[in-house]
Image (cartoon, rainbow over all chains, first blue to last red; front, side, top):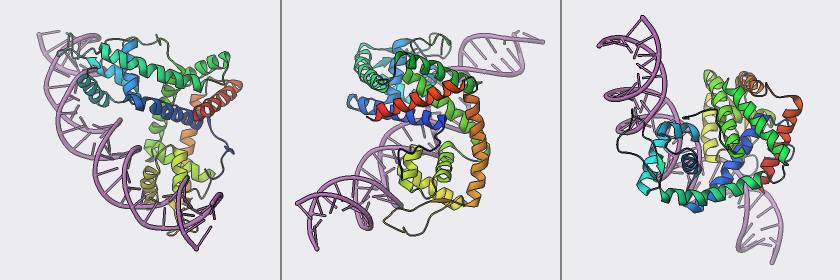
Amino acid sequence: MSQDGVDLEKSLGYLLKEASSALRAAMEEVLRPLGMNVTHYACLELLAQRPGLSNSELARGAFVTRQTMNVLLQALEREGDVTRPAEAPVGKVLPTRLTPRGRRRLEKASAAVRSVEVRMLADLTESEQASAFRILQSMIRSLRA
Amino acid sequence: MSQDGVDLEKSLGYLLKEASSALRAAMEEVLRPLGMNVTHYACLELLAQRPGLSNSELARGAFVTRQTMNVLLQALEREGDVTRPAEAPVGKVLPTRLTPRGRRRLEKASAAVRSVEVRMLADLTESEQASAFRILQSMIRSLRA
DNA sequence: AACGCTATGTCAGAATACTGACATGAGTCA
DNA sequence: TGACTCATGTCAGTATTCTGACATAGCGTT
């Protein structure tokens, strides 16, 4: 910017984008040494919390299309971080699971990401964090309506 | 998701991404009928607030690389929404300005985007909005540190 | 003046994510 | 049962964004 610190009438929408962008950059930075990117990490984290998620469900959870998630899953499968049955147990849905190797890689990544989040919240009180939680959820609900 | 509404231990980071993603989707939706996307709009809005911004400055403000912003500016120039001098008045920096046509297109887009933001904040009180402002700025500051 | 350092605009190629399309399976309803 | 709708996994092609690289201009220090 030609003149910083003047942040003239920044809207909440812009601030939201700015914060999200800064968070993503910080995450990419700590994940790169581990050979991961954010989508990569999001996928493994989702699988740790909800084993057996399908490709489409993972895509929605990581905010990408199911085609994009599919190529990521193929790569993760090739590297041995996740497994999918060769045939669908029911319907066409292929439930995905972490392998022990994937779980180990996720642990390191989780620690790195947690440290970023801790830094992000460093100057906020408990009650401010609770407010942020409520407010963000309200925004999401209203936007989806 | 296989089971929605259970939002198990969602982190603030995830919520931030979720809100930003929902906002972007909502913006794309209202901008599409106007033949614009979000980066498109961000560029014009920045130019309205700070006429004469350079390519690199616009890129930083819209959270893309300067290469990406450059191709966008070339398109905007071709369509007659912005103008850039053929030669740099000083150094290599090419100051960009809105044309009357660009200003008119921006006005419609601004109205559409504002309506989205109003919807996003519909269920929040004035003081909650002020809290959101403070909190997001704190997060950004901490992440950049 | 001369040397580094940084930032800019731009070109080319690579990587990444997307849109479109298809066949298939589950669920619904008449 | 049959028709319809919707969601899934996947393939192909397109579009978009990024990384790498280059020449150049401003700025500060020596």
